[in-house]
Image (tube, rainbow, N blue to C red; front, side, top):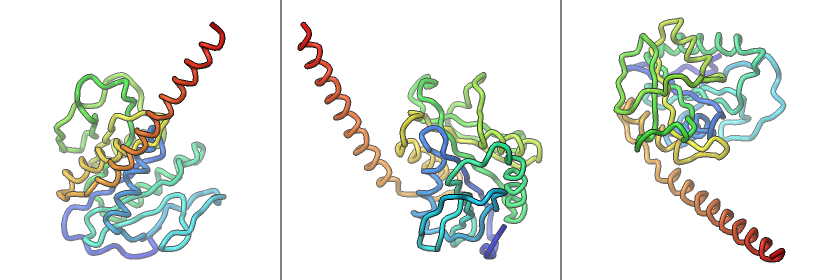
Length: 233
């Protein structure tokens, strides 16, 4: 439901969303966009179960699924702090479709993560589109065969069934980590779609710092293992 009216639509409106899945790429991407573009909250998706977690933000208490929009009114974001409850997925999907129609969205952009083991070359991401989309991106299409699972798959299917033009972007990621570098890749792709440049230097700096920490931990673990093995020679 919307608590505030969105700006008047002057050009095509894109809705971006993702979830805390592989590498948390969908969540990191949407959260960074909201902060960087100084979007304002205009609504939320009401959950069938009262949430047992919240946080204090600049606009008040956070909610599990919040709707934001930029001042120009051409980019909307559905921020999912948590994944929808599986048993209530139909309710979430119905609310998502209502949001698409209420905001008069022209295109949906879904963001997920793809296990880096599927990488075949130097590409940074893969993608796919619904049959009603005419979008073209300069990257390989999604790998044939592997299943897309979770709420992102549910939204892809419903966009296909309801003839909503949609694409899904899957930057390569390490599934078990918070992948800020993959989020930066997604944001650059989204920027090319909506025709704006979003500075991702903060994300890349954080990614580099995390990579240095991880490498230091690996080296420390390796050194400790070598010392331990020598004790029993």
